[in-house]
Length: 586
Image (cartoon, rainbow, N blue to C red; front, side, top):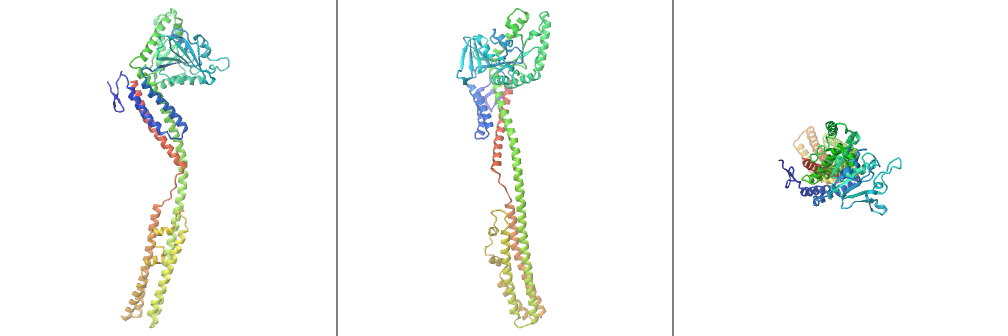
């Protein structure tokens, strides 16, 4: 024996041929459903909320079933394929002609037959007319039930919601309702009405014709009912009298019956379930049974009618009853879950297309911003490069002038040439400082004019580098102390003279000193601009262009997340329901 546990709870133990512990199962279904419902509580999708509300109502009814499962009123729906003799079959199992048959006209209203100590009918009218119900005698129900054929298209009786028939018949137990539905595929509206009634049922009885079992469209209808009720269907093959011949012996007639049943089993092999049968078939001839004649055919099929009643008693009054009732209800939950799942999957696909479109537009804007950003950074680098080269060119000019004047002063060999050279050097230094600071200021102004971002400020950028706003002092600090160099330069020149160097040697030494100083200045300027370039790179790395997602795009992502959560919960729930259904069937 295979033991089964649900939710890791030993109390939910299920063993073959034993009652299913519905109370624990119902609590778990309620818990999982509540999680799913809470996800969509604040969601804006009206259609989904409606579907979830329908699902919630279904779950609540399922949960409440645990309190009255044993006294639950069983619902059996009967529907038939075109001219199958459905109403005649119901009359046959009731043992009396209660329902008008197709010889009169087809059924056009949902008609429920249930047990009562008295015999009467209750007509339920459309409540908008004010009158809700009316009690009538059974013999007057024809005009309330049959289709109106006075027009080209047959119509159900106007303003009749349903008809209840009460009978003191032994066949109908107090906890069992038998519902006669309008014929399937006769009329689209009536077909949908029949499906709605079948959805509420615990068991469906499908009445077929012996001489014409199922067309392709009828097969599809049967499959729909079978799937809806998780295989809780019984097939009655009516009008067997068509193939019965009183002149043939029993063996010949039985052979004909076997052929019909073999063909029916082949056509219906994927219907039913392990509780009822795969499939469960009852060949009958309702008309001969209803006539209660003494023919061999009537006696033969009366036995089948009796067996049919015994089968119903077994199904609804034994250890399998609870499983039988649970299956279609789980099937309905399963159906609603699949509806929710399909709807959410479709909506996610739709949202993904919208997101793809908006993200594409967003990417194009971002790409444009990025190109603009890189171009402007390149402009900044170009300005820095040009200004640095301009400073170097100006420095080279000044140095060449100083060397040229030094050469002339040394060549003239006047007594004051040393002081004059010192003066020339001071003038050159001041000129370079002035030019350097002016260039840096101009460079900053040019860069500030480049609008990288609305918050871009090159001055603020320089402050971020901890470079003072006083650029003259800043540059002076970067290129060194000019005064100390001038004194050192003067001492070196005096040393050249005191060492009695030739004028050529003095000039070469002076030139060497000046060129060394030029290199120091170049290095200082290089370091200054290198510091800025390194921080421009950091700025580029840390300030890549971005574009905030629009409220519309954020809303789409939010909705997608909700749908994804619902899909995840629905799939988990479906897996859980599928497992229970499979175990109940086995």
